[in-house]
Amino acid sequence: MKMLSRLRSGMAALEWGRFSARFARCPFCGRSLFVRLNDGEAGVRCVQCAASTVHLSVGLALANEIPDLSRLQVYELSAAGPLVEHLRRQARTADFSEYHPDAAPGTMWRGVRCEDVQALSWPDASFDLVTHSEVFEHVPDDARGFSELRRVLRPGGMMVFTVPLSDAPRTVERARLTEGGIEHLLPPEHHVDPFKGNEPVLVFRDYGCDITQRLERAGFGGVRIETPVFPVPWARLRPVVRATAV
Ligand SMILES: [Zn+2]
Image 1 (cartoon, rainbow, N blue to C red):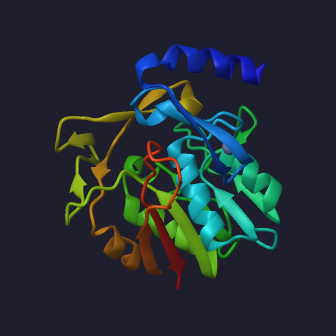
Image 2 (image 1 turned 90 degrees about the horizontal axis):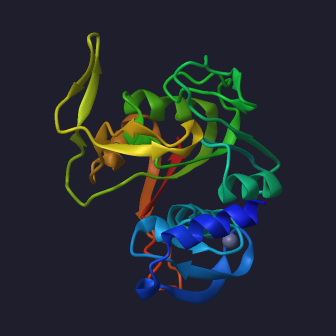
Image 3 (image 1 turned 30 degrees about the vertical axis):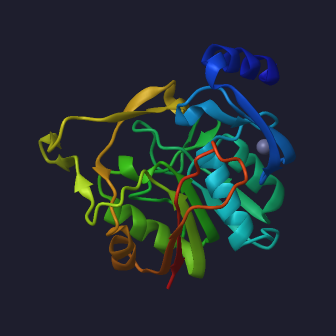
């Protein structure tokens, strides 16, 4: 059923002139076929597990950084997809959550734990590894969010994540949360959230190179930003940020 709906959405996204296919090793499902259905970022997928280039970026960074997850307690800030399935299979324990504005932190909504990264309900030092993809550009108070993730990590624990990242020296704030509501500093930009039925979610900022200092202010060290190497040239992977809780 999953395969059929995947095939159907794949056919809808397909532009024949742009189609390309190549075998490579997927960090989640092993040797697999990768296809390019169109030139969009979402047009590149692993045929077996449907991993996107964002998933692949985090998966490959994890495989390079921590090849053995079997002793680690892991927390990922999403609850579905190939990375979630991989962590569920590989880690000692794996916890997952999504954000829902109407759900209190730590409560369940449609079978999924809900958390606000700015006010997590987890105790201090609960995890060895925290991962997230394309989340923090949507967090109104990202300093508080990073501090919260630092709090729930054990000292020496690692955070591995992606955000849309430019090579601008400074992060550009696009919007901020005030007592009167959201104040837009730039024209509103949205991404879609599949957890809430592809509802548009506001982008609060475009991160630049100062993300390193932002992480250091929240109690992280050893920040490194690297784009994993992948032998499929048209699969343009994302830079992945790695930081250690100090
Ligand atoms: Zn795969």
